[in-house]
Image (cartoon, rainbow, N blue to C red; front, side):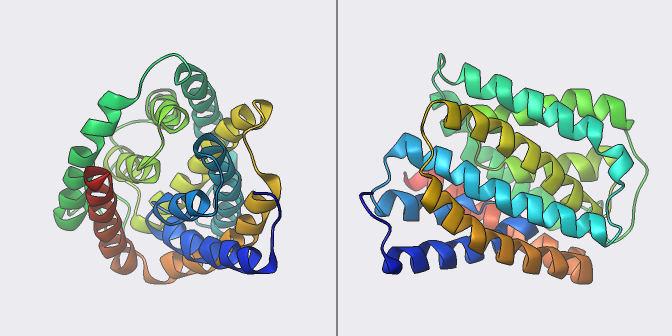
Length: 250
């Protein structure tokens, strides 16, 4: 874009608010932001990099809110967050050498499967359950693998993290969402670093969207902490189906 006009500034901020709200509850905010970035004239690769910038702002805001309200244990975050960062860095490097066509075809089926899981699974509740993995093993396996996927491809990362936190760590809905935001912030930041070093971030646009993301993420994280599974379950189902249909259509 040659210039960031007031009209586009307003559009980017409002888009960021909506995406931050959706993303902090269920993930999938990129469904809203990426089409707007492309519509505005941002080139495709730069749109991906700019999207990582605004997404990093939103996930950081949500993470800090969950920490402040006591839904996350900061002392236990460093390992899963660090593993997600390392995995994402590796994925963002690997995507430069390998095609993502296989993942693009497979992802809609995975998302529809997620929707069914979130709709019917009794483990997604407002109570913690028995963990099936310890945090170190979870971090070194899920953290690195899903982080790698985020750096390599990206759509649905939040849902992978939520499902893993529920199934493997036995977390209740609000804690799983909080852990997801922390790990997703880390993987976003790693991918953003790769795009920034390649000069593929439109900083004024990303920061404008990030302002909106911060407000939307703050509101969405409060809604999750207040309503728990009552808002997380339907939001996850709707976003998973919407992402699957969007990818199939494209």
